[in-house]
Length: 116
Length: 117
Picture (cartoon, rainbow over the protein chains, first blue to last red):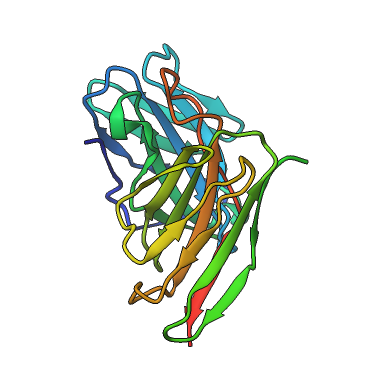
């Protein structure tokens, strides 16, 4: 079974600074995808960024980048130049290609608060 | 615009009542999912459907039921057997259920907040 671990229940960052949200994973699938979602207080889940296990380069989407270290099984999200609107819950997730691993499995989330 | 519509946004249920949460998508996605989220917690899978007229139990299916009579629709019924139904419910869809391409993530609806009164 695959598993996602987010060890930071809460994080604080000063506006305009960068912040790293940690995510480690465990899977036996040779091919898998890693995702980050943002959940504001309104509740909807917003897709931020994707990294494939065979991608040679780390994914980037605007102010979001994914620090993918395959050997360490980590997929940390880096948010540069934090904004007040970045305050939200952030979930790391993954899906594989075999059996129940094809479902998207979520971590427990990190609550990020951006301070003015 | 394509997307997922969940209704109602807020729902109140009396003890012993069944209630049905609606989820409709116009993305032409094959797979649909229902998740439950408790305050400050992650998402737990209730049911999923890979194709019309087929669905499978997730991790916490007890006390819930679903149907998938149309590709666009995947309603969730919270039955009286669910002893602690107060939670936030999210519906999601995906192009398919994974196959050999794990890059397809899920598109989520805006959620239904269910409260037992």
